[in-house]
Length: 491
Image (cartoon, rainbow, N blue to C red; front, side):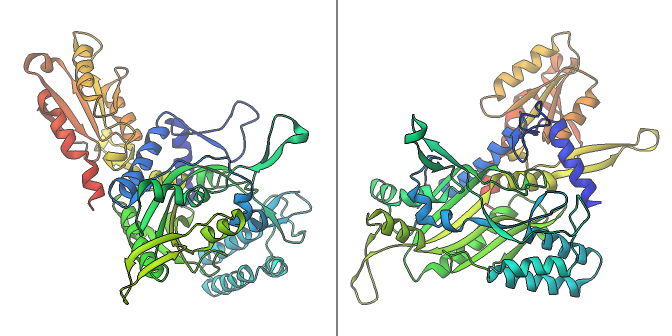
């Protein structure tokens, strides 16, 4: 059933202009790269704005940044990406297909759980965690063989050895090929923040603790890209690096762990769809890490990570660049002396915008039976939080004549400065309502002949399908009350 729901969500995305396969007209498009359509880009912008408002606008000690995608190649040497940014890959010799070894094992664990074999699932999970923690590639292959995992394409178990595969895309910068320098498309946005730490701190006169936030594209050469926009080669991150005094990182880690889950819950989806997942194997830069996971139709998957990165990044950039990355802290310690110079520790919150987009759609997609008897029908509705909906209101003239389009257009002209409005005059009014339900539009307003007589319209509420008569003059105040950033940001 869950797999069927996910297929419907993917189909819905294309049918209603949310997501398209990139360059689809050529050989079914480019794998694991997607374009956001006319409605998808609006939802994506609204989700990005929700994050930005919470992180930057609601915190007086967090500021924004927009760092370049291209960075000096030494950046990725200092960060550890050149030497250690890889996934364990395995090939099937018969199908010639390549897979992530840990993903094959995770799928097997999920199958054990689905079949009710929890003991085997737990046993394999513990063995997988141990192999990943020890970076034991031979043990990963042994586990694949022991649990008789076959290639989904060939059906055989004729595997190669497991080896590491670097995920960074590289290109060349320079006018002449022989003089070109090798550079990389950034695999994360965080390093742009770290190399600009002192620029922002000094120019903004920022005082510890403070944060730097940014959103932007990142690129990873995912060999196994699957589950629609869940895992892509070109994706968008929303990251914030919060710089703190050494020794306080644990309390700030707990603060942001709680604050970020609260931000997700404010969307209003089922709280049981979220959970924390503590990292067993910590990244080389971290002393604590936790994921916020969401229960997608295909199971719980990470949507955001909160990491205590210590001083690894700033210290690494200082060592390789020769430029001091220290902060002078004039606050007094318990002995009445200034803390002085130190390299700050960092708490990171990192969320994938595309995964947030996907779980928002999955959580909002509903099929509801409406009507009774011969008029019984099923409607598809995206029960999006109104503030996130691509269109906040749709305006319809009941007919395309008698001056009704002019009334509808006048309403749009009055609302479009504050709200994204949709106009449609084609088809019966019921069909128009259904299309807006599928787009997630919270309100529909219909101008009819009575509107010409007494300046009233019918407003329809998406979730309840309730229709009521209201004065045209009251439309904006009704929308203002129902659609407010304050309501969601203050939760």
